[in-house]
Length: 127
Image 1: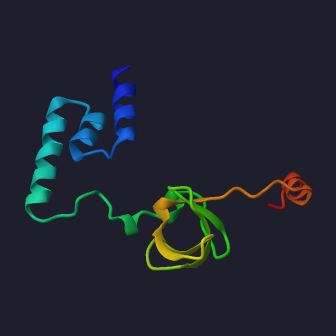
Image 2: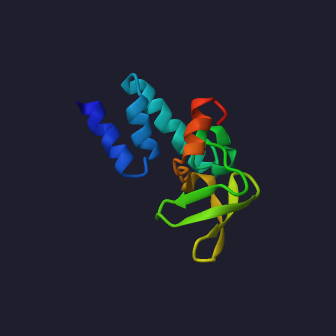
């Protein structure tokens, strides 16, 4: 139960290095070692996380996005991908006409509406 409570806590807020170390530790010594590594990294001006946002492989972020895909931002605004930018950023034209460059981590694909054509294509494995 403690692990499930910890996971729920992490999902509800952005996890700190200490939170992550507590979740994955196998022993108190391991936890202390990771804490020391985090402190050394911070004192030398090292990066804040294991990977910078642009270094995360796009495959780990969900389905690949391409020009013309309908997407939804976390605040539920919807738009269309205009083009891929540097790293994992995409230029999106929102339904209100505004255009923004948004990180892939903030976008999700809007599911296609089920039509007879898409149902048949899926059934025949063409999708």
